Length: 215
Image 1 (cartoon, one colour):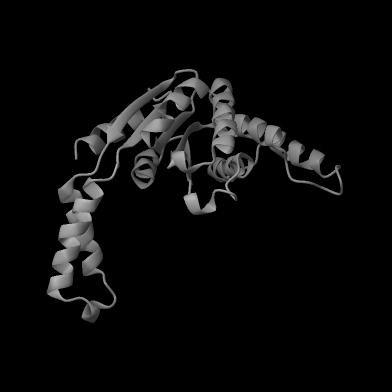
Image 2 (cartoon, helix red, strand yellow; image 1 turned 90 degrees about the vertical axis):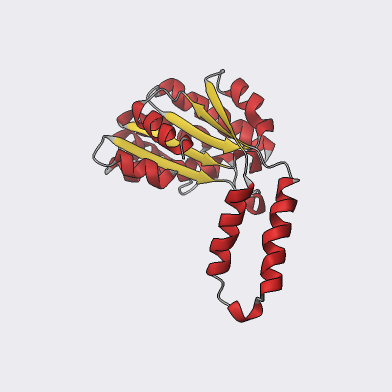
């Protein structure tokens, strides 16, 4: 999705930042580190560092021999960066974020979109986070539900099998079992994903989503 959005944004006054939340890296993905990662991407998209941000970094040098910007400083810098250009923030698998960090992240995003109303946020996650998003983002959320289809799973398995680097280890019987059992097991799992769009009334994303959901 991010690649397609970037393609459609080419030539426009737009900057895009994205995050992927990983269950295996929950402890490393604090709200501060996640916001810092977004900030780095947005600054690169601006082409130059705004003077307000330069000053904020200079001020941090005066503390304890120099320290990293604190959470509140990063939020203010994100407000500044996102106000310079039309900004899209994409966050994948938000449900994998530790609840404590997710609360801080969402509260910070809410502050950003309040200061920079042109910012749009695209989030994916399992349905249980939907009410939390509505609360933390003041109800400014539109959601769509996605679930896997058997044909999609089988096509994905075929593509992985075709790219197998050890084809001699696979015989026709094993391949048949894979194509039969894995789709069955996945269909029994709860696989619905919710796509949430916050303050998403913008032609660029509307066009992309229309083409995406019609596939």
